[in-house]
Length: 493
Image 1: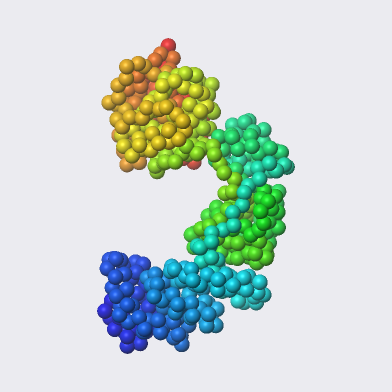
Image 2: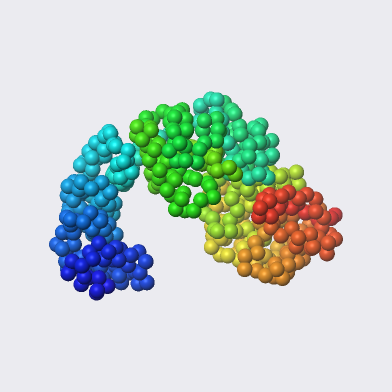
């Protein structure tokens, strides 16, 4: 670090040394120490560092600005704004704004908004489009930081709606049966004049709105933007009475690297802004609309929209989760499949309850009696109790190993998402399933039912061969790629 400082003061390799300091801040082994060291250097040589904003070399000006932004060096805010106003090199202008976005610039907000309005209305030559777009985005980020975005309210009473109820392949038939739609490669497509009943169905993951009748679009960013721009504006206007603009982001589901996806979404987002004349604004942090692009095998995209203005209250109890938690729509789907085997008022047990989703969805589908859940992970139990309270459910969650659990009466059902292999060996997992079925024999009534979500059907069927008191009544493949299945296992009377 001392060598870098010395060379900077001697005006040697200024551009590269500024880059080296930024790298230290980002990737240094002792980042906190490096930050303090750089801050001290800037404070002690403030006039020198701020003077670099007027350096002859454009990349030196850019690197100096970005370094000050990395440090959130508030004393530099006036100098950065003045440099921005005077800057004529287009690729440097957004660097000043990126730096200013890390500081308090509330006093400059009127000027920043004026510049945003001017640039938005300005005709820009194609060769300057990239840098102008970067400046626009940087200006908007600052304005949004202080003023937020104009909020829109979703109008769910619209008619002639076409929606895609997104779900995995093996859940499509159940969702189709419940909604009257038709099977689509990505879920179930429904045409309806009333969205409200669909918004209460629990077995799909999310509701999306296909664009342009669901026609596939090109994978070249500018062409893709031209193919969806008009229909995206129309759809936004249909479901919202408030005026434009709409802030959006692009989510690209395709076999690309992160860098490729970032480049694609930036280019397409910028083109949508241009084509829409500012009615659509690309924003990665504050947005109400997500343009979802799902690639097919040929590399073309199925375009659809997710509106964050449309509130999904189906699983509002789900405040807490952990990494191993099942998605509530998947739990709801399993309870729908298992419903013919569930008994109203049943005494229900979940040995590996996690945050409680399986028991909550079990009671929603078929009202149960007393419900108990055990888990060895104390944090999960605390989260399960809060989730149950939010759901209005009275469930007894106990921080205990299932194999040490005892109760005064027997249970009618076990409903559970079995532990995944993780770090367990094959032998350890085999023993787990053996212990599970031994313990289940102790706590279940005759004619009881086990509703089990598992990735290890082989171990289960081995235990069913060894425990003749059990019988496999139904098996559903839930996820082909991962091997998860839903098993309905009965206890002989």
